[in-house]
Length: 304
RNA sequence: GGUCCGAUGGAUGAGUGGUUUAGUCACCGGUCUGCAAAACCGUCUACAGCGGUUCGAAUCCGCUUCGGACCU
Image (cartoon, rainbow, N blue to C red; front, side, top):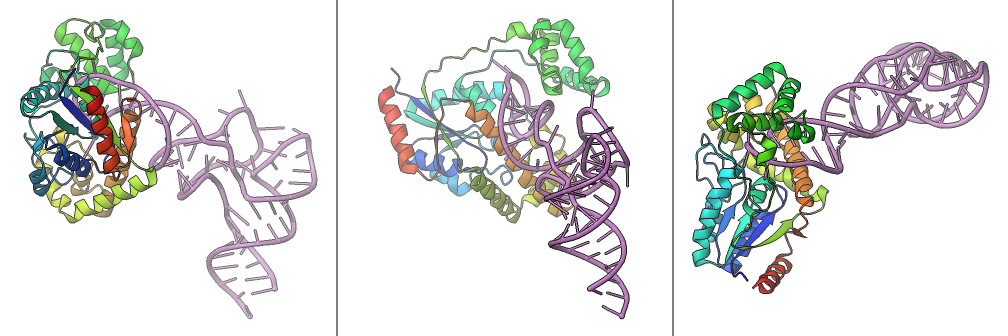
């Protein structure tokens, strides 16, 4: 029996999650926390489609533009911070909404990550450099020595995965695989997951249109302002990298805009691939507000 | 009306007789426990149509269709 409910709203970029979340928040008079790995940052409101001032008036938002681009953040830190925040919010509310498109962050929030120690950034940097210089294969060979079990299952062509495993092995002195439990953590609240999506073609049209609107709203200028910080991870993001390439003279303005559209579509597709694996998600078209509220109500009732 | 050139998978573009045959991009599908709007993987067998030559044709020949250039 649990009277606290986290309503998770997932879905690909451009599917209308923000609008829906506000409508749901108004219905339950409850706050919203973001599960979007880019909306956390200040300075990039247009390209990350953060809820506007006006939208934030309509519902209380958390984890929106509440840290600097240079701040180190990741899904593990997010899990801890978000759980603390939820604890507070659930003191006053029975329902809280979590909305965003970052699958891994949603997973961190709902199921938790294994409790692994923070890795010294300089170690990661060093491993990245070596990976760049010596190649992934060499790094994978090293992983084979340090953690043969993980070597067997890891995507050996993926530098990010191999380097991650190595940095954990080296910094803890233990094989990464022995530290991975993969178990789901119990939460002190119920989780109701819904997803919003629509026909692929319609979604792509919406994405294209939204990019045009972002450009009209001043995305280029926004990108120009953060250009000096372009190396930061937070800016390895669709809608910014393309401008950086344009500013560097590699592509034209028109190409940059086209690429932002294409990369946003690809991102949406990857998001769908991720979410489709989650059988707990109940899917809706974003326009079906009544049906969605009905569904959430019925879930809340049945869980009470 | 005549002459010449061309026609390759969604796009581009190699390939002039023979196990597999491009490549690139896009699309599509997928992977996923600390950079995740990231990183990575996979699939997509086409040669305009018809007929002929040949053991064998995208590749050679003929006709047809379509496109382009030029000539009268």
